[in-house]
Length: 70
Image (cartoon, rainbow, N blue to C red; front, side, top):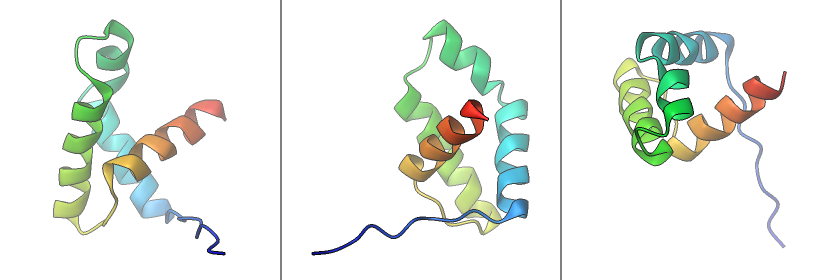
């Protein structure tokens, strides 16, 4: 039986992720339902990868949910 490996985020990755969220005004886009969440997080995935932080759109979406709860 395989166990899921928990993906950890470095502080720099989280800071860059939050910077992207602010720049792209993701909260406004998600609240207004103007864009599909999948499209937003796919776009964030591309930007994260360009910076050298290899994260999937699913990982960015999970990180967003985790930070939102805190």
